[in-house]
Image (tube, rainbow, N blue to C red):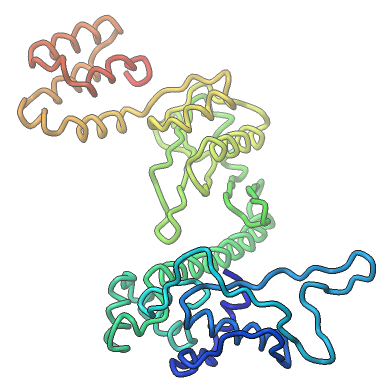
Length: 369
């Protein structure tokens, strides 16, 4: 529905019930002081009869530029033509028509109360119960739970944009104070920052020394916005974790992974790692094939074990010792042949040949064992 009607029903001048009930049928020749007044009167009639309305776009003449679909005459606006027939059933009951987007209304007081409830982390369903208590019934509430969710989403986007701006200001400070600090941003079509990447000179030094192997993990998420937090790390000659770079990503799609991997390699002077360890994310696997063509891709042992425990929890509960035996083989086999022989023997001993997830792990053993 049209923005003009949204704005009209968003003010404190929202029509009273009596005004809606007494709304007159539009007639040809009716005169109005302003175009907005004409639209308001027609909107009242629409609210009474049970349909939503929108304002047609004005059309201008190619010769003189004058509006010819909506034209002011003699200082007034007139209705030139009326068409009251509809090609759909109307819903004149207040119970349903109030859900039409153009007929919804939310006062500043409503918004303040909603904001306070959202600060208390109340879900939309409970917030609607509070409004029902205030208004006496649900039919007295000129908005619904979806509107509450939309307000929360809009507020989160505002807060997110504000925090990103603060982050970029912090980056400017770090560029002046931290040697070799570098950052990159992924921008969408609306020029909003969607993903961030940053590192410094120490990260570059670590990568030059220990960058043969990197771990790329997206299992972390920020609390407020749910953005995947991606530390790109490795291991030094003391067995300690070292940081190569950090990223906040808008999502976990192939395109986003391509962006962060390309940004990382470019920031490191074009040097690709020899091996990268990740979870079993398909989008990430695809991105690695595209960007890191000379890199060996392996799956993280921890993720393999965690997912196996989840997928086979019921079967493991019935077969005590099975999961421990499989992990013992995986950790202690010195050759591929020794692993395959030991794994198959455990599967046979526990009659686990029909377990689909265990069979899949054996098929992709070259990726994790």
